[in-house]
Length: 293
Image 1 (tube, rainbow, N blue to C red):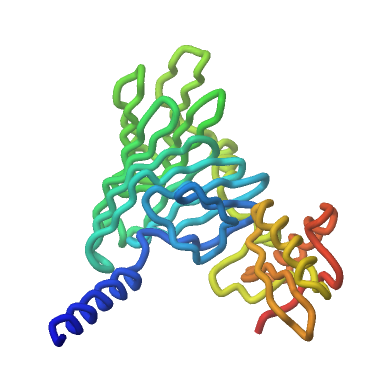
Image 2: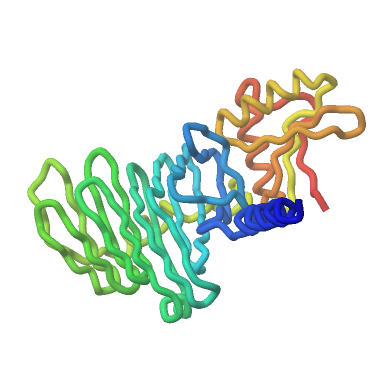
């Protein structure tokens, strides 16, 4: 009996330890609409959501997603994209971690960056696949994109190795070094991006202040509806989630509220409410913006 009880305690402790272990990555900011796909299920993406191997992130029109990896590096994704984390593991402790990742950018815009200290203290083996190449990261800051016409890579700092299908392996090790492969045209050598091009690349992945950014512990809320019936509130919440907005239901003063939480600023919340209010079925009675604390 004592042995069985000890076994149960040990099993529970292991389960709690596994649950408490930090995820290899976490969503730090979202400019909706965006979704996370896992095990055949799709949910509206929220700031603070853990990200694991096998997950796929989908971004909608004008969306942005920022991921924080456990080693302190960041991944930013632009709109109208699809990004797969085929493998993502982190070993070690803070300041001495090893990241091993195989990523795929199926469509859209991508930026990876790490801090100067992180480059010195941590190890990375991160590969990003686009349509015609695989980009090897060993601690750097670079941008990439892919669509139905071409692939492109630009280095902001550090070095990447671009293993291409028809040009061999190309090394981009100078700031603003730029490679593009137009699928229906002959391959071109590595070039240098202009300041105008650099500004355009950065803008494709940067969240836009005041345009609906949510962050971990954001202090502003959109109440999309405050309905008398739970059925009415549930219908609006489902419609919002389907559209890529992480709606939650809550009771307040006898009404059934449909909430979107964690906006970075009042302007971000107001921008989303304005956007939703012109779309049928996404808002209801008594819609408003409010501070949560």
